[in-house]
Length: 405
Image (cartoon, rainbow, N blue to C red; front, side):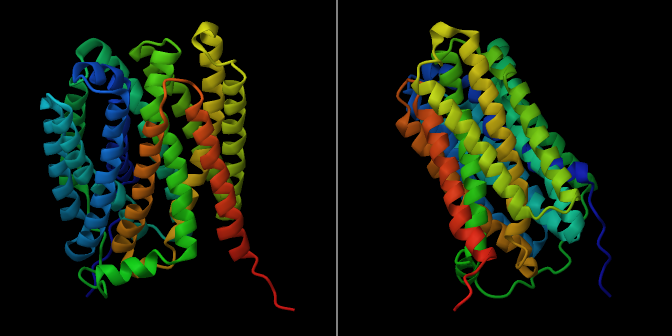
């Protein structure tokens, strides 16, 4: 007799998903301080975010497949323990090599929250309800990284950069306790995944629909995490903010991501097609990024203009992040609709694909960093334009195939 599925708390799923997202960005206000403390270049310290995202990519490839075989709950607990070990390593880091290695371990373990949080939601909630749940999760996916710099900015300014990782250790212990005490097992088909990982990898990642949705998630997160890696230098070193002031601007970013998630949820409730919501988000994102690029090129964003430049930059980033937050949950929700029979494995393969791309995109941001205000908005505009191209080629044409004469 098959066991009945007990639905997990949506709040617990949000905690599971939000922890690794928060961990990606909470220390970003400390990047200039870390560069000085460890005597490394700005570019090198930006790569600590790139290595985190690469560790995430490796982790999601591993945890989703494992959870299909042993269950979501035990795989999640194993990942959280590894995550805590990585946080402790970051706390003790005295050089850039140890920090990079610890960030990789932290990401490998923490990635279990991202991929399994989504798999748990797919297990537990049916189609129409799942879109609404993913819109709510999408708010957490965008809001948690936005809240990270707020917490990290004040922690760094008053307690030093290494104290940021003590905050993450405390949060990790709390989430681990909640998972252990309250999370039910949602995988009712243990060890039923057919085929080998390589065969599944080929099947999922040659699907044009999956590739398109994954690119949208990648480009949106490429904008978000490039902002987190470049933003401290942009706002603190180029425009003159303190770490705590820099952290506070993410109150506005968080508000934008919440508003974007609510906009997406509203359209989902009114039964707007997910592809149309994605297009709206892409157009909004492009409008914000191209306008920021124009102002940067014409010299209106510089340290001499003080709060005007900060406010102008922030306002246009708010528009950009509003659009991005409408794209991500709909792309995640619709990407794997044809792979319910191997939800965990499909989620891990999909996550590996888009996190490798995100890692590459943040690496490019670090590589083109030149100490001026031009590269970041220009790069964001390029990513937004590339999303529009992929939508036209990979989504619109697939939805409206050419009819032979």
